[in-house]
Amino acid sequence: MERRPTIIDVARVAGISKSTVSLVLQNSPLVKEETRRLVREAMDKVGYVYNRAAANLRSSNVGLIGLVINDLRNPFFTEFATSLQMALSERGYATVVANTDEDPAVQAQVVGAMIEHGVSALVLSPAYGDEAGSFDAIARGGIPTMQVLRKVDPRIGQFPFAAPDYRAGSLLAVQHLLSFTPRRIAFVGGLTDRAVTRERMTGYCQALAEAGMQPFVLSGRASRSFGREAAEELTCSHPDIDAAICFNDLVALGMLSGFAKLKRNVGQDFRMVGFDDIEECSQVYPALSTVHCGIAEFGRSIAATILAWLEEGKRPEPETLTAVELVIRDTSGVRDVP
Image 1 (cartoon, rainbow, N blue to C red):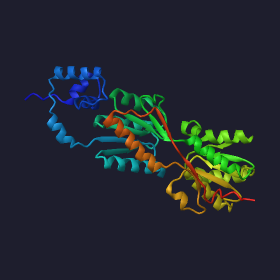
Image 2: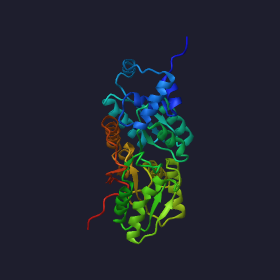
Image 3: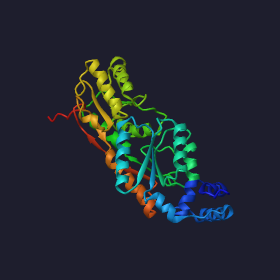
Image 4: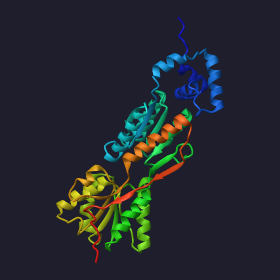
């Protein structure tokens, strides 16, 4: 018996992805008329007949959203992924989650697999490097896609970007530290060749320029281990630095551990602010001052945004920055009032 043509056959003849063919068959408003024409012609050529009743039975009205995260070991990204997944679940959508471990090759692999499995949309907190390997494939598939927390592809009209306002956060943190008239303030952690590091440094550099103070950047991996090393280097090699804003809370928590080993009093001898406000910040001793990014709320807002795009055709703004706030705890203290 001759094999019945499948949706994969239609996609191959039309020269597009299987997921795009699926969108055409579902009468999605996201697909261009030219693409619809290509699919109809390919269906006629291979003799494919769409069984809508069977398709509805298979889908059970549940869409599938792909969520790709650069580092799920970091509680900041874990909280984002969890809040987004739960918000999508409440609306009847299933989420397939992949961790790329900052590897662009892994990212390209999982993105390709998600497209082949017919995800309705993608949300990427992307890895750096070889961006075309992922985003060009998404573009060919016509999948609604948002890049969040990190902007690696400049085509934000096609791949809208959303993140907390990192510049505003570092500006608030440094202005707070300046109120104690420190000798010097360092920016610790983050790799300087990455856009997200430069974004988090922007407010730091602005505040120091306004104060007439020279910046000091100690770059490195955004990890606890680097934070411990940084505490020792600052203490031994740069004793004039008595305050710091950290790239993220993991670096700051590592610095706390390093300073404890050196018996340096954080909050008095050295003032410090982290970035992200993961749960551990309020539970360590001394409690860590940090920039609160509202990451759980951010995850829920991204879920609402992607569903509005899918269900109502409301394309997100090319770039959205959400509000942040400074949470002052023990490591930076409260300014003494004369």
